[in-house]
Structure formats: structure tokens, C-alpha cells
Length: 117
Length: 114
Image 1 (tube, each protein chain N blue to C red):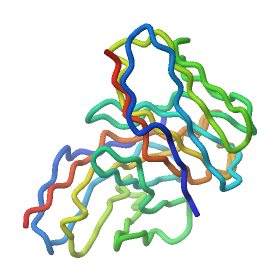
Image 2: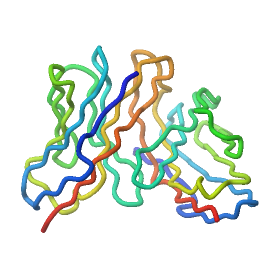
Image 3: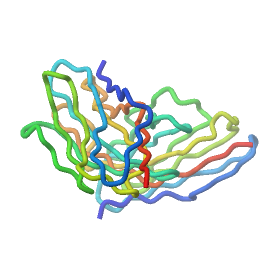
């Protein structure tokens, strides 16, 4: 089973709201990722968690706050977002974190379609 | 820095025809390369990957890709396209700096004529 689940599927929020995106995998993977994908563009990496610790932050604005409560769960907390943050947010996981000589396949969830009004 | 280029923004083929989607990479050594497919509004599904070894890689859904070092290419092929293959296709490479991140090409949208 190579399933990554994401909730909710769709989210509409105002600029003053606080909301969270959730990602879950039960494959025993030790790395989890958040990507942002704007319309007609490729996914762009936001964060990487390795063994439940944040290992990469691609200079993402602080209005996006990731959290990894345990090895199966990854959250993305959203606060004071801007309309330009509207996008498809994808979660992925891999067996091991990326490192030299070893590159595990990343498995993606279906995404959360976020609209900021 | 490593990168991939997908020169074709759109490709239209007739159902049953063969398909080749182009991907060119920039990296001096052997890169780690992937092809992913994304249906509208959906996440990404891995079609196939190349790390080393046999340069012809078989994937799911009847897709294959061939790694050609001399041409810095990793083109995706399918002998007979089905209407359900209509989607966005992304080639991706792993950066070999300290982050080993997955970097995607700009994508090729495949349209299938009945």
C-alpha cells in the first residue's frame, strides 16, 4: 500500500482565518514533505521532515507553519494567508529522507485545493 | 545546479497512436530521474524512475523511458495511447547538493484525440 491521504480535499478561507491541512501515511516512511503547486505550474518544495524533525524549509513565509506530531502525521497550519497563497498543497512521503547515494521514491497524496478570499 | 527541461508544453495525439514526451536534464554525473503523471485536480503518481543500470526502464500503465547519457535525455514513451492517458506529465530530477531535493520540469500536457 503506497497511500498518502490528505484532508480536507478543498478549503476556502479568509485572510484572517486560521486553518490546518492534514497529511497521513501508514507506510512507515521516515520522511514527509509539503509542496505547493500553483495552476499550470510544477510542484515546488516547501518543507521536509526527516525522522519527525524539520530538515528543510525553503524560505517559506511564517504564515505557513508545519508540524509533525508523529511519524505518520504531518500538518500544515495556516494563518493570515494572502490570496496569492491559493494553490494545490501536496503532501508526499518517502521511506528514508533524501541523502547522498540514496534517493527514495516520493509518494504523493491527492492534495488539498486551497482558496484564500 | 541540476535541472530538467520539458520542451513541449502541450502534445496532442490520437488514441491508439504512439507517444514520446521529451525530458532533458543537466548534470555531469548520472542523475536520479523520475516521471510522474498528474490527472486534473489530483496528486502525482509515479510512472517510473531511473537510478542506474539498464537504461530502458519499464513503468506502470505501459509506459517506458530510456536514459541516454549522450543526449542528456530521459524521454517517456508509450506504444499506444488510451484516452485515459490525458493528463499532465512531469519529469523530475534529484539535486545532488546537500539537500537532495526533487526538482520538477515545467510539465507537458497530453491531450488525446478520439
